[in-house]
Length: 191
View 1 (cartoon, rainbow, N blue to C red):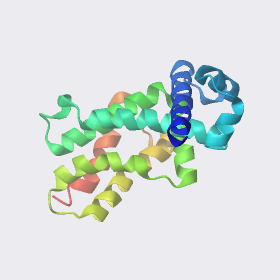
View 2: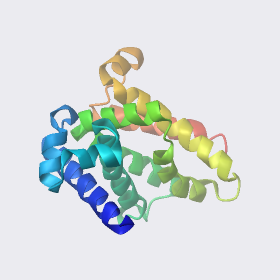
View 3: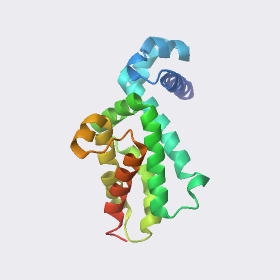
View 4: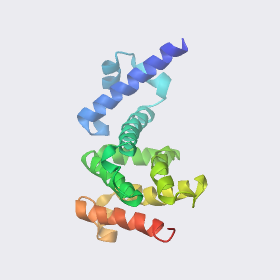
C-alpha cells in the first residue's frame, strides 16, 4: 500500500509541475486542474499535501532543485575557476527565475515562511571547491545563506530592490554585477 500511495503522490506532484510549466502563474493553477491532470480525486491532493500551497511549494521546489542539480553537474561550467563557476550558476538560476518570476516569488515566499533551507544546499559543492579545506560544513552553509538570502529577498520585489539599490534585476548586466558583488564580498576576504 505504501508504494501505491507514493505513486499517487508522485503523479500529483508531476501533474502540478506540468501545469506550473504551462501556466507560469501559480495563481492560475487550481486543485481541480491538478486532480484532473493526475487522474485522482481532489481528496487525494488534500490527503497527501494538506493544501494547494503545500503541493505547489513542493512542485516549484522540485523544478528549481532539478535545475540547480543540472547546473552543478553541467559541463559548461567545468572550465571555469570555482568563483566564476559559482557566479555563472547563480546567474543561470536568475535567468530562469526571471522568465518564471511569479513561480519563483511564490517559491521564495513559501521557503521563507516554512523555514526550508534545502535550496541553499545546492551551493555547497561549488563553495566546497572554492574554499577547499579552509571552511567546514557549517561555515559553507552559512556562506551559502549569505549569498542566497539577499538574492531571494531582492527577487521578492525587484522594483523595490531597484529603488533601494539602483540595481535593475531585469537588466542582465546589472544583475550579474550584483551577483559578482555578493560572491566577491564573501570569498575575496577568505581566500
